[in-house]
Amino acid sequence: MVIEVILFGYFTVCVSGDGVADVVLSCTLVEEGVGLGGMGGGASFRRTPATLVFRDVAVASDESLETLTPFVPPSVPDLDLLLFEAKVSSVEIPNADLLLHADCNEQEVMCEISSYSPRGSRESSDPAYFMASLNVEGIEFSTVLILQTLTVEKDHSTLIHNKLGLPLSQSGTLLTEVIFLVFSHIKSVSVPLRGDVLLNCGFKQLQIPLSQEVAIEWRLQHRGKGRRVLDMKTRLDDAEGSTVVHAERRGSSVDAAKVVEPPHVSLSKEKLVLKSETRQTLSCHCNNYYPLDVQMEWLSLSLTDTEPAVFPDQGSLSSHRHHGDGTFSLSSHFTVPPSVSPGTKITCRVSHTALDAPLSVSVVVESPEPDSYMWVLGFLIITVLFFYQVMR
Image (cartoon, rainbow, N blue to C red; front, side, top):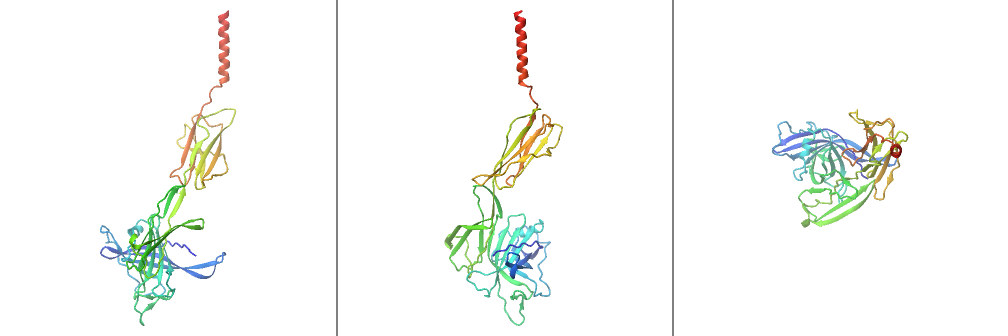
């Protein structure tokens, strides 16, 4: 079972030396609990606040470090405090500079940590492993890291964490190292229906290769169901980078491809002439859009108005029409009020997630033309009078 827990917490950047800095993230440790979890009877999950410190994150030469202070662990070690200290110098985090600037840009950093068991390893084996998932709000930054605990010499003075049962440093931190990470520069992308989309996913690992094969798998997930769409293995000679250390390590990155198709909007009439005796009905057709949700509204703008106004009566909507290609269509039927004056612009405005801005189509109300029957009758009377005068 996979659970996604997001914690919005504090974020700190500390300087630790020339050209590098420490990044401190507020995270949550997620553990599978015991007993029934909710009415569905599934497993429950315990969530414990934790702190993740990235040591020696590379800083660009033009970065100013004057306002940063070194990270200092608690003066008195707390054996209940979950404080993960991770070296990232061996496996560099792509676009780590985004973490450095997130706080200044008022962007939330979302962090989740969970215990991890690589395939081929035993649960109680030493070292221990953890998985950390990081996302930065509002920007394309997403990465999953595998942390491996570092060896700590054990003696009578060794500190042991009360919850994890793992040896700590003398300052009370759990020493780890990033050995593998999966990253993506694209968290979400919009793609037209039946269109192509390029998704991005990469990986890095500690440079101690033991295996000579790299396995890559892409899965398509939709509404709780999924299937494998690409599965490939390649030799190291054909791939860039190295494979996993000591055992198979797996990380995953989720790229959301949002399928959209903008609507085609049209009016039933290109010309609207008011008639005093009959009501005029105007239809707005919104065709071949995806996904389903769409908003349609009618507005008017008279010659004396400066801004369009929404009609109180919005007419009626047809039922959604579902086409074979997966798109939908909808129509709105509007009865033009007799009080509308000539020169008024009537607009149908459509809002949809595939549109950057609402789409509008309009028609201008025209004055009624004189009745053609009266013109013909008048012409006949004049003609008869003319010939009557000529024949006299």
